[in-house]
Length: 117
Image (tube, rainbow, N blue to C red):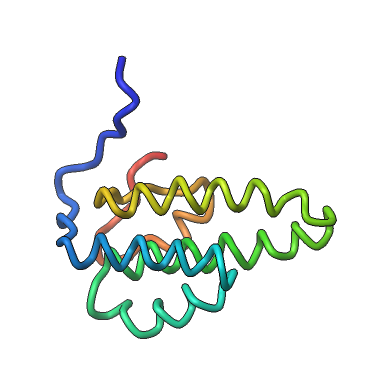
């Protein structure tokens, strides 16, 4: 059994530029919380579904994570950092990786129903 995630074949394949920009979105999330991903989302969402999807996930995750980190005196910030790094790597590989719950919010409606996480 491998750790590779299987992706539906009907999803558009991300170009090298989209993968790089997806990685940048998650990198910005580490340093700017939800602000950087939000800016990228509003600039790129109509140009690339892949970038818009990752920016939307990063924006939602880090907005919720920031609130939880404040409530837990920063402890949730460690979890948030780890998740951001994991999804940074997934975006760089071109994966349409869904975060639980949040991934459904950011899923491009033009692509139909999101795959099961």
